[in-house]
Image (cartoon, rainbow, N blue to C red; front, side, top):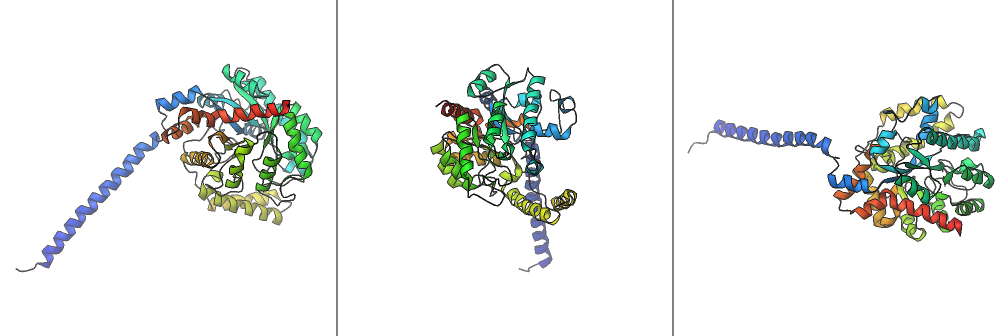
Length: 418
């Protein structure tokens, strides 16, 4: 038998071509199917929609008031949230679509107000802005001061609107000013923001007190007496442990996530999660890509280090700082991630602390990037859908959506009454 090299290689080339075409066909079909499925990835099933509607969302943190203050000169006259506001995460129609029944509106003021000497005054102005919003849209919002108010207002179809202070710098080191802000309607205070205070250490700054100072402990106990929730988002792990030890009422993390999933100082370590059931508190999961997506958390840490470096280099020029930061960000983008990552954080808290200790604290309108599928306040049903797909029943889903936050608020009032 004569072996024909040309015939053999021709047959081999033909077989190879057929194989490549077959593989490419599979890949093309897969890509086309993925493209077709992408719009339906977060389609809400009838069952999920019904479960979501039978409950409601009680969100721990929305920064709409600061957005309105800084993006407008005429406040709600210019940013009328009864109309679509595509540049914001929040407007009334989308709040309704997301079935938001209770919302903590953050009265955030920047830490720079410490040096300016107007932190307390600016916080009062922000609280007043929330009151104005409620008065402008009385068919939608009503002020809530306790859990009983939340249940009553939500039952009428309105959104129970609570006020949360983001950072202990708002009280300017004064228990009396804390009481004044409580009397204006504030019902939680985050002990620090991004900078360490004389009485409490921040997660993103150099520590001073190894947690809480004696005055910091006094602040926590006074908040207990007032029925104000102690919020330990933004604080260092040492401050978290001190607050859990000192507080007589359950604490909250109004907008934090799980550090074991995304290693950022703003997130909650497992040893703190393990202590949480003894206190009864709740971690309300933040939606910011930079805190929940592992790769993005790494980039955000680098950005944080750069900010500190530029602040030292250009102490008197915020323009120079921001210019270099923008240049760095263009060269170092970070992924948005997918909505499933939020449920990964929820599940981790459930695994370590239990189903009674996790909720939602989106940080909408206070963050620059969100996972795909959860882009605004209309998208909360996606959380219900994804939890349902992972095997959670209605009771557990409702605990995450609103039940745990409501329980903590009730217990804070009971402690104050005692």
